[in-house]
Structure formats: structure tokens, C-alpha cells
Image (cartoon, rainbow, N blue to C red; front, side, top):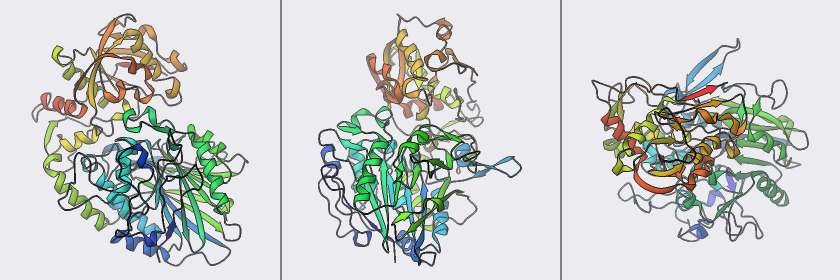
Length: 626
């Protein structure tokens, strides 16, 4: 017998218009019913009355969850499997992005190759064996900023894979809004892409079998949730409610046009609001799926963040949130920061509560044991335990996921495998203030947009979050070492933003640099990658705007003049004020150029060959004082 998630729509004015979800046992493709076409934001909140059922391997997978296990007495153990920030990594991620760090008992560390949907499926299915009660949840950014195999097809391949993985429910991350709320509705709901159409003859995209939750994303006019705010999983009388919330700061990091008419509300208030609603409905066991996270003191996935005391080894936004979310919530599954942790942070009542995150790109999954008391209908908090497991590549690949990847690879192959450049060594994208790959991309943008008829750019700025993967020298296929394919370049810059060249005063440029380390970016600085010739000093011994040493900011050796106007190249995300750079919206005389991907590929082709491959750019444009 498969698990039967029970979806219920909230009652009262705060919930009308959200998705309504019947028992999964009654979800079939035949009785699927649309409440309305996705014609605009006013209809996205009422997309489906019934989600489709699963078929094939994933249906068998869910059916196998009825195996023997603890669950016949007053308490039953519910296995919660979770992951986050998958970002469409169907194939194993490359370079450092495809490894995790393990700390050995003697304090030394080693790296483990990890990730890939074929292996993630196998690990999840093995973990579920013998478990009578098991549910799988995610904390957002499952799609968006994806490698070419998924991104080229607007993430339909990733959603198909997530369906096969047996995902039961997920919160919406900020990257689910990369193509706007209307496209998110299609991802949930199915249907062919409005401009690209259907990718396979005679086949229509069926959408996600799992509900996406957005408790804190509402329509500005009506106040109604965009999608269901919560979801109730039920089996044999055991009920667990899931509340999903999106990063409140999403409007700062996605295209404003795609979320027009939506409001992103406070995460804590939204979770607490729906926790009360679930309690009134008799659901006392509650898990929050939150697309916001923290930063453990160690990069090792097995680091003990509860040493010396509960939650002492973790910092960042999640700490403050966890301390304020209602004690009614029994566990928090988080994401966004791409970190790995399984901590216990005290709730407002001072009681320990599990808070987890499983890194990113499918490299880890978290297994949490929720002990459910049938009499109180609540979780026995003292029995909750969570562990992060590595998605190693030493297990058999899941055949159904392999077949899915092969199918989409056949469609993508002619485009993805085309050589576009050559590199002499890895051009990595390490976590640092200045990155070799960031320098390469900024230089490519300056070179393409500096001609007078292309915009006359004098410098280029690149947001670090727009660089999604390294360029790896070792061949990923049959192309040969050092060859950069279109698919690999796409994976580095998957957003396909249009390039802009704009007028900014020197004063506005200085303000932009200060906004890297102040305001919404103060807690987690976003250091812009800059083109050659633009230099300055970043003093990390200071705080806020004082970190930018004003008289050190120079262009080609000349100090920036606050009163002078400069022509600056950047992608449309930055020119729209994205990532907290509000001053960049004040630009004038905008010229729209080619896409950032086309500019990057053009630069690789013009500046490298098999005989003369591109070497990693030197760093030193930003002098960092620590």
C-alpha cells in the first residue's frame, strides 16, 4: 500500500484560491482537472484541483514503502527524507561542485565524489526499504540555474526526474521564479512551454506530481496564496503537516517583471500562521520547508554543529528564524545557502528542534526520524534525530533515471556537444572575493560591448550568483580534454540574461561597491566580479560601507571621479537592481546587447584554439585586507 498524502486547502479568506489536493490514491491522469488556464498571476493560485498520479518505477517505489517496520504501538517512527537546491543536476556535477568534504575521526579530511540523479534515486530507494512510514520532502530551488540538459528544455527533464524520485512535497525556492510565476504554474500544472512549445513530438509535459508550497507568497490585491501554503501527509491515521515558505528576499534576486503583482511575506509570520491553522484542523505534527538557511563553521558535511552546545556551530539567517518559529513546528528542513548541517537550534520555548540542510546539487540527502505519538498526535521531540548521507557514486545507477537522461540527451546532443572553445586548465569558481572564472566572464562582457557601436563599455560588472559551475579541463564526454562544449558553457551561465550597457556616475559606481557589503548584503556579501583595469581594496577588518576603501577605486589606474559618467556593461538582472544593488536601477542611456551566454561563447571562440588554449585569468583586481 502506498503512502496517501492528504492535501487540504486552508479555510477562510487567507486560503481561498490555493490549490486543492485530494488523496494521492485518487490522483490519476484521467481525472486530472484544471481550475483555470494560466492566463496571468490572478489564476496561478488556482491551477489544479487534482495532481496527477505516478506511474512506472516511482509508483512501485512508493508502494514499497509499506514494508515492515516500527509502527504497531503507541508510537511510530516516520522516516523523513529530504534534500534541497537540486538545481536540475541530473548528471553528476563536475569539479569541486561534485564533491563533499568528510572529516575523519583523527581530524583530517577527504573529499568524496557525490551527486547525480541516477545515484540519488538509488540511495533514496535503498533508504526507504523496510520503512513502514516514509515521506520525502524538499526545500526549494529544485529547478532554475540548471545545467543545459535541463535548462535547455525549461527544466521539464528535472521535474520528470523528481517525480520518479518519489518526491512528496516541496517548498518553492527563489529559483523556481527565474522564469516568473506564470512559468512556475506550468511547472506545477503541466503543458507545453508558451514559446518553445512541446519538445517531443506527441508528448505533452505533465507537470509535477508533488505539490509546491508557497505559504508566504500572496497576490497583492487579494492576499491569497499563490499556491498551496501547506500539505498534509497521512497514512494509517498518522498525519504530518508540511508548511512551505519561499525566501522573503526573492524580489531582490529574480526578474521583477516575472513576479509583478506578488508579495513575499515574512517567513516566520507565515509559518506560525499556518501552524495554527493546522493545529485547528487536528494536525499537531508539523514540518516547515523553508528556503532560507545558515552557515556551519565547517564545510564538512559531517561536522557537529551542536558542539559545544545546541546550534553553537551554525550562524546566518536560519538561527534567528528557528528561534522565533512556533514551538508547534517539530522540525525545519532548509536550503538556499547550499550548506550541509543537521543541528538542533532551541525553539522559542527553549526546547531543542532539528534544523537540517543537505548541501546542493543532489550530493547529499537528509534522513530524519520523527517519532509520532498516536495518542497526542504529536512528534516526540526528544526522539528526533537527523543525519546527512552522501549520495555516493559507488552504487548502481537507477535504470529509469538513466533512460530519462539518455532520452533528453538525444534531443540535446547536437547542440550540447558542439565545441565552443579550449582551456589549458580548470578555470574554477571558488568561494572567494575574486574568482578566475568571474574575471573571465567580466572580461568577455567588456570585450564584446566596448566597441562604440556595441555600447562603448569602459568596464563590466558580473554578479557572482550568476556563475553556476566551473570550467573543467577534463573531458566530460568524447570531446577531449580541454575542449569546452556549448553544454558546459551553458552550465556556467544558464540564465541567458540580455547584456546591457548603461550610464552610471562615479558616485553611483562607488555606491554599488558599497552595496556589496551593506544593506541586504551586509550579512552575506555579494562581491561583484570586475573586468580588467577596474581595481579597488576591500578591507574586511572593517564593517559595512567602510569595507570599501574609497580612494583605492580606480579605472585603468585613474581614480574614479564621482561627478564623471562611465559606460558600464552588466546583465539585465543587475541593471534591474538584482542582488540588492538598488543603485544600478538608476542608470541612464541603456543599450541592449546580446545574451550573456552568447557573449561568453563568442569570447571563448575568439580567444582560444586547440593549439593555443585559454589560460585561467590572474586575480588581483580586488585587493582584500583580512
